[in-house]
Length: 365
Image 1: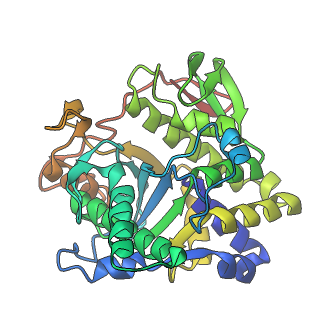
Image 2: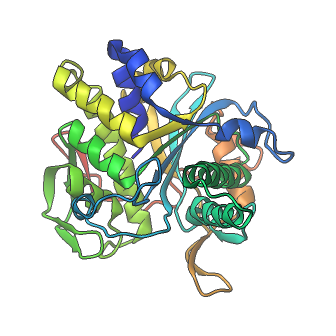
């Protein structure tokens, strides 16, 4: 999912700036959120990029995907959607190590315009409610309803993330299931490694142990599987983190950068599937992306109080201490790794796999 940002930057860096930038779908979500009275301070010590992966079954204009494509995605039609991947890429302005901070999809938070619920419901729920209100008010232009409801959903999601972390989101990038499928195929697949053979009918996962390359439907199954994993959703987060690291390395390798056909495929995939905030000069992100693949980024997960909680509606949720989350992420821009609240616990929520690496690829559950 999050490799879409790196992919966009790579395409731009290779004399495709105008072509890619003009063909990108953009959103004014950050300027909308910035006007909110409860927005956190802008200067929080880092550039924070929110990377969002959603499971919508439509294109960027809200048109349903054909059944043939849904079969390739190993899913079926569904009117609603969730943002099942949320990663906050935090790049300190002091030049220190950067962090990719995962937020578990079931983290319970207050959602503006909705209720206290899982954070992955923020976008979809507010989008649905907004579309209902617009139609009830007499709006018959379906394209307008799609644009306005998307804007409201994104605003609710960004506001929820900012409220949870105490940070200001400086840039926003979003990619759908179909986009992830296209992007993973465009770069020729991503090397991954599993400690054990695993399968899961819900995600379509069916993988042997050891190193392998995944793309398209297999890549989706790899990052979406959570059943039959020792730590469920937390293991899925580790999968997403390792996939992102491997994908970024693959995208910025000479084999990808010097292949005109692959770069062309990347450009098409980005334009079809990626949404970024208005005003983001992706070219300016290239230098940062290059440094992030050189061991200068660490993948972490927000601290979790209880990964198996239940809310008053009987839903399975991830319980967090908002104050602890704010101390944790604030400290990631601190050279010492400490905050006034005490030492940080990096990877506090993510289960640690055996430290096995094969052919330069970390092996995970």
